[in-house]
Length: 383
Ligand SMILES: Cc1cc2nc3c(=O)[nH]c(=O)nc-3n(C[C@H](O)[C@H](O)[C@H](O)COP(=O)(O)OP(=O)(O)OC[C@H]3O[C@@H](n4cnc5c(N)ncnc54)[C@H](O)[C@@H]3O)c2cc1C
Image (cartoon, rainbow, N blue to C red):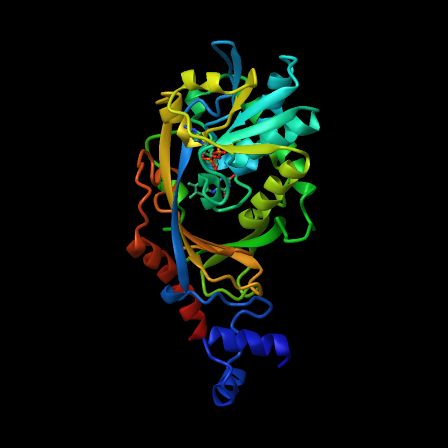
């Protein structure tokens, strides 16, 4: 057994470095040849986070509005797609902001949309100040899963304008190609990960259980960007399930990625000011005449925009295992190994899970239950 498989076996058996116990580990074959097991133990949950997706039935708001002598370009309401669409959505907001002709521009918000707006404004030649209540890692964006999910809860099919699908595609392609430029950098802000979809039979698939709302699905428009999902024949994979498929997805290691974005912005002379606005009328305090509003879920209160519906999502974070280089979906639970922690997220009833739930209180029992599902999968492999 080579060192890699020895370590794998030891980790899978949950053993310490003690010589006697290590001998036992040697005798335990790695049930996942080539894949390292996740230590899905509830005492390895080091935090549980909750985030609210800023969902709008009509899709993200990108309109231009006058507030007194200010021009406000909105860039909020990206549901479960905010990281994925950020560069493309912000490129449109920046075009609209720069069209006003001012060279000093303000950005409200320091999450995925605010940071990408600010950086693209700088690249377009503007001098930029970000005004925000929170910055990473406090922002809601820092509590996202970190996957390429460009049409997750982005709109309802019957509520969008006829040109929205094409606009979405434009945002999606622009973002994807920008993310390519963050691959291979120190700290791995962005990387590709293999993802297995494992099912025990017909019962799986929260998608089938979605009831009520017709969430928009546009992935077929950008099929060429990512690898196709392949069914894996029985015996060709190590998992004890009825069916398995494999694809690869972009993963955002949000701790290092958002730090990189903040640093890139500051290095180019950007400024960040901590401030909370209670109403649009307070924007007179800002010197700049052009403002990109990237306040995310915060726009609901600030802009009195009740078209924003909160869609709650919770993640249990397991201690990172750099040796685990694949993710999986099993029993309605997603496991995604990031550099800053292993994401374990119950997908529940699919897109409707957490719909209109504004509670940001973590639910420890639900976190442990999700980890238990993943533990159950690995336990079956040990038998
Ligand atoms: C559980 C979960 C998992 C997710 N996973 C993914 C994923 O894998 N991929 C993906 O693409 N998307 C994902 N999302 C969606 C993504 O997180 C959001 O779409 C995105 O974070 C929205 O970013 P934002 O910049 O608009 O908002 P935020 O990150 O909320 O940033 C808003 C900014 O505005 C500031 N602000 C707000 N109000 C005010 C105010 N009144 N005054 C001053 N400042 C203010 C805040 O302080 C903050 O700086 C997920 C969401 C959840 C909940």
